[in-house]
Image (tube, rainbow, N blue to C red):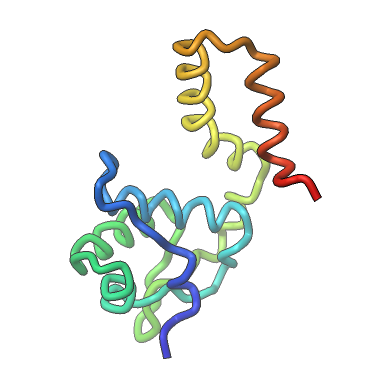
Length: 133
């Protein structure tokens, strides 16, 4: 039976960002949001590679980077798990830090389009609230 966590991941093959970086960022964000919990097992390299139709070495590289950064830990005989101390990534400062590059890009593009802050904030607020109910 496939690991249900596989459904949490997706990659964009045509992106300028390498697939392994896309996965690293997704896992980091999922841990920061609490979607992936400390001690939770990750899909195997083979399973995730098959589900995403990517080379297993790509998944292995992402997992290695996540292990080096302390987000994942290797458990002999079990595989990769979300690190027990990964609760530190749930702190608001860390989550904002993860969002900062996206916000910087938003600011850059808004400036290029000569959009004022109030217009951008209104649009962002509307989008965050979701569709009108």
